[in-house]
Amino acid sequence: MRRPLVPLAIALAALGLLAARRGSVERRSLTSAPPLRSLALRVLVYHDMEGLAGQDDPTTYRFNHPESYPKGQDMLVADLNAVIGGLFDGGATQVDVVDAHGSGNPNPDVITAKLDSRAKQVFRDRPFRQYVDLVEPNAYDAIVAVGMHAKTGSRGFASHTYTIGMEAILNGQTVTESEIVGYSWGRVGVPMVMVTGDDRLANDLKTMPWIEFVITKRATAADKVELRPVAQVHAEMRAAAKRAMENRSRAKVITLTTPIQAALRAVPPASLRLLSGVPGINYHDNTVEFTAKDFAAAYDGLTALIGVATQSYSQLYGEMIRARPDGSALTLEYSDRLFQRWMDVESGRWTPPPPPAPVAGRRYHGAN
Image (cartoon, rainbow, N blue to C red; front, side, top):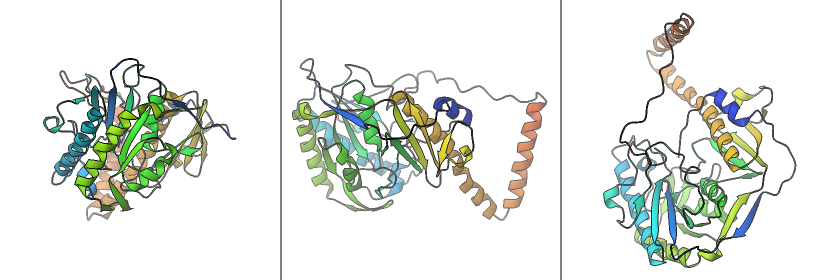
């Protein structure tokens, strides 16, 4: 889960003001996984944090809830260790783990000291987009995703796509984050072989019938589940991970046909209505469509639009302020400060501060 804030101007630049072309398209292509180039079998494991075994409390995946988030961390590393054990059982020679959750924790959601010592976490000295910036030829041989969630509208536990209130559509098909990972790595011929998450995600991923999927729990609402016995789930994870390695050659590589017809539909609390009426923007029903030349352009366009749509989150904050006894005074203070900032800019008394420089020695872990 990520919550980017992207200015409107950047969003429009990323989209290139391109309207989507309507009509039927071949959505994707499937090819066999390429043979291993050596005896090495290198696996990259993405982890999210909403699809964990034993988890039924939404605050366990949110860093700003210190009373419950550590429980989520323990559940996360337990799931990961079960999968990592199975991957090595099945012949993996290298297992790397990258954070794809973005809880708000400045440190990784995975507690390094508790992670299987045979696995390594992915760190870089600069921020990176875990879904696209790690993708390069001959880096990995298989992709696994642990603790994932269903897509927006699937009524799974914390079901969403990228962040709350977004429905991503690629070549006419709504997609999960797991599929986004698969399409991204498909560009360099690497298959996704295993995913774990709730039963609604299992249904979403019928589009990828070759993957090993372990159901961690059964969703009854976005904040309620029926739990499965954790020990049983972990045993299934280990066995499924082993099979995923042994059967890697049967996995499929997925790619999107190009040009890609992409769209983002926003649902409350998000909104794209502020783009309605902008020339060159194909807007309808809280949805913006565009044509992208390839996956990278589609991904950048979607994330830019998400940055626009998240601006509507502030409406809820405004409702909270107005409901306070001092709401009128706070609203007036905000209005006065807004006008003062405008006058300071016009008078040359204020300029935006520069973006913060990278912190020396800091390691970035993906969805920071």
